[in-house]
Length: 151
Image 1 (cartoon, rainbow, N blue to C red):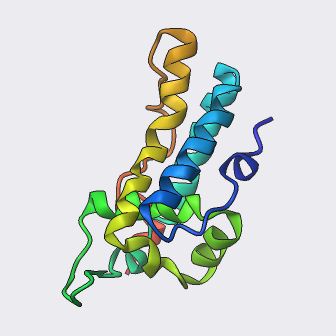
Image 2 (cartoon, one colour):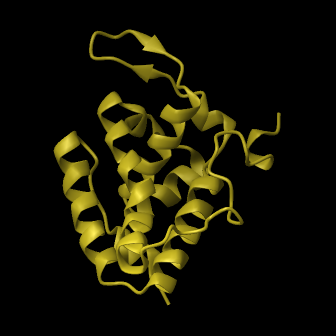
Image 3 (cartoon, helix red, strand yellow):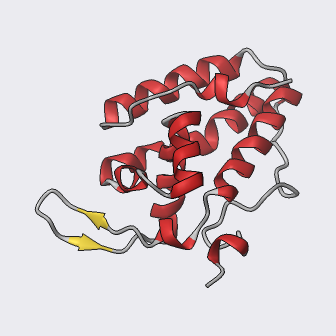
């Protein structure tokens, strides 16, 4: 059984360097997994992304260093959710239960967390020489969690 949050670990997600370091660490752990374990990891990742696909989080504005604010795009929101997961189980749980703290994952540098989406499938492809099939799992597209987007 894959312990998803043990593989994810924790990261303060305060700059690109911390995100890159977290992704490198996770990639190393995924490299030691079997193809079945990699598939289960992706299932859990997609489920976690789906759970925090909520309107109030998508509406948190991006704030640039100069104070300019603009809305998140659907891709930006997906990558912000990845950054939230990289921060670890406690930070994720706080956002899931209250929405508190999500604003830091919307920062432009946090878009680097997009790499989390590809780590397990890349390892799977190295091990099996075939692409991982993830079509049947939870959708990660922004707005797909109908309960999270209910008015």
